[in-house]
Image 1 (spheres, rainbow, N blue to C red):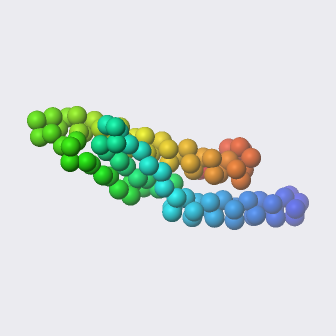
Image 2 (image 1 turned 90 degrees about the horizontal axis):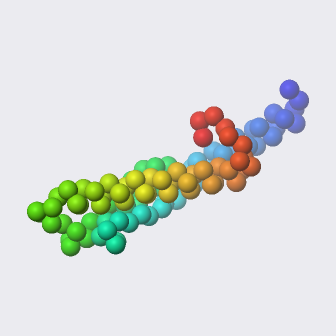
Image 3 (image 1 turned 120 degrees about the vertical axis):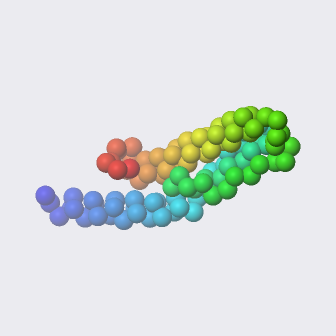
Length: 100
C-alpha cells in the first residue's frame, strides 16, 4: 500500500472518531399522541429522557399509554440512526464501512 493511501485512511479514521464523539451530545426528539409523549435520544441511540404529559395517563387504559411510549421511542431511535448515518455519510461520501 502506498503511504498516501494510509495517510488518507488515518485522516478518515480521525474524522469518524470525532463524529462518533459528537453524536454522543447531539439529540433528536420524537413525540406521539399529539405531543403527549416526548422522547429525547442521542445520536448514539441512548434515550436521554421520556416525558409523559399527565393527560396521557389513564389508569383504565394503560395499553394506550404503553403504545404511545413505544411509538415515540421507536421513532426517536430511527431519527437517531438517520442522524448518525447522515453524519457518517458526509465524511465517507456514502461509502459503506464495516461497523458503521
